[in-house]
Length: 273
Image (tube, rainbow, N blue to C red; front, side, top):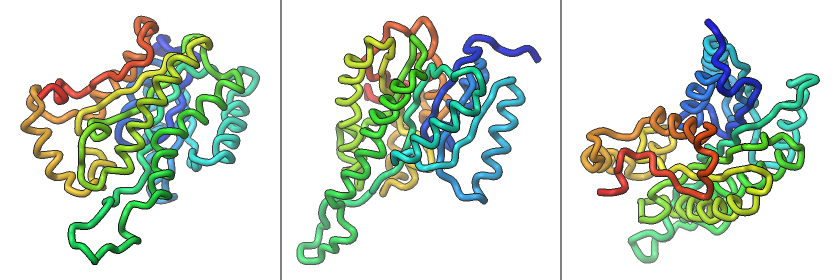
């Protein structure tokens, strides 16, 4: 099999690549010759089959996939990754074409309970819960972008892509902290699109349709969201992770260099109905 050279010698750094949109992006980008550094948090039991999948994808597409099982949300984790990442490349400094933020980590608690006098504070969303979720699913993107930029790792025509959701603009049960984080991410991405553009970096977000991922299943009442999506989507089916991965790939192409500061709907028109 001959190597696909579309993204030859270029790298994607994927934050949260063990499942869902992140893993689908690993598969899609590898098919087009992009090397991938993928970060995730897994136990030793769940990591073993994941590493086997990465190995098969890398071999089939003649690319390099570097797995990093570490905490992407603290300074030491970022510093450790960058040191290992540069070291793994040997004499050739890795060139990052894409930074993909696909971290789904946060709190899914209500703001209040319906029965007065029976509020259990431990089960209600706290300010600390909101702060943690906002950093995990929004502000951490800025730290990663700055650190990669400071190390001169970005390609001269690089892409930063984050993932938002319709839940940033409407009420979903138990979704308040994530909604706040996604709304924050949308504002952050606009400013990054402007202030990182002098470095050749384009920042965009993808709003996927409701997708049956492990993260969705954690949302209270997710079964109702799934049923609504199945009947609401004008294309007659739910969004799949592969649908979103294809848009991530498209945004990495040379033809997409003028797309900056946008929210791309990858939902088959679900947001229209």
